[in-house]
Image 1: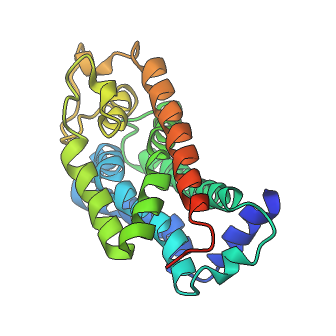
Image 2: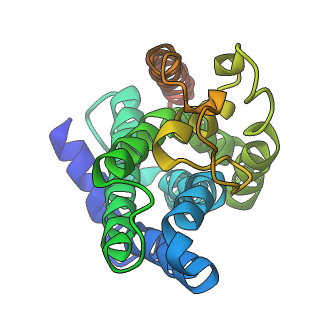
Length: 243
């Protein structure tokens, strides 16, 4: 499996996808500073998980599949391993990009916080970015399978559209964790100290509660595992009959 993951990472060398790992968080942090000044952390973290990261994940996930369609899956079909393992290796490779980009985002916001105002502590920023990573990875296999069925652009539009519309649905409800898209927006509030609409949270806000975080993380990770296994099965079921 390690060799498959390494192969997937090598395929992304010198591509726009690999550049996005750094570009996406750096641009987000710089925009936050230029437009919000001392409130750069509030603005950057908010834009990161509501807009920039969703479309970045969609691009990475779609690219992981569409680059195979250009060669009619020849690079996949020639391998002596099961197609489900190939699919899982693609998922892990994209997940590595997501984690790395979140860590760069955290580092950028922390550094700028030292020169402006540290509105989000170093530890809160780290935990928030880690939770963003854990609650977004279920979208990777979903977007990959959509890209396989519909193509690159349509997969990105569907993924980004669902995030923009559904990430705010039910966020203030007790059963918000039933909406996978709403989970990141809700559970990072206690750490980023800002509402999904960009307004800083006031002391005593129920959005600062952390009691629902363990269940929300469990739901996201179970969903990621379930979606990954189902999509891997769908991918391998196609056998030699690819586009």
